[in-house]
Length: 227
Image 1 (spheres, rainbow, N blue to C red):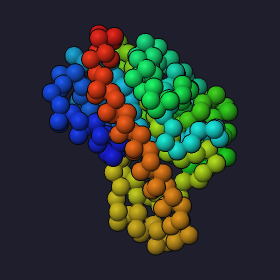
Image 2: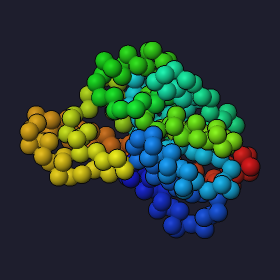
Image 3: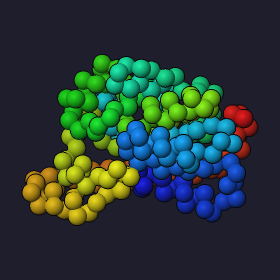
């Protein structure tokens, strides 16, 4: 998402380590993600880190919690183990955020209902759900690059996502205000849910901002351990 990439882009513009870090905002959809990666992912980079929000499937994960994936599974059940070395480095770098190690699930469509989140979480032994990581992990494997993933919980397991939030979501990860407003006009009862989700998103972005600061401050240790 654009907002989730912004803390990294802002730091990239301010710092001189342009040869060590590149930021790619993927958006949504497998074809889009793979196209962007094939065109934008520099061949000289030694490792890849996925950062973004996720939905919880278990009740003990709350908004703003940082998660490091040990593995990612897609809806077909195909599992990919992420780099233990890179994940351990991230665990150390992000220790002030108390990140938990979990298995993540990547789905093709948003999972918005609590019952479906819980059902998929139990089926795949996954603690959270996103829509990109398995795709990026497959690309990284094809390129022979280590990959790690850090996710921040947005919506909790017991929380439904209001339809206007989905109606306003664009493929590039931005929000179309006109579509969002039109959907709210027809579904005014969703306003409280949407306001709550907005507050949660700001909390999740605060954690992502902290992740960006810690990663940029420790990029040398990441580069040295994964060359």
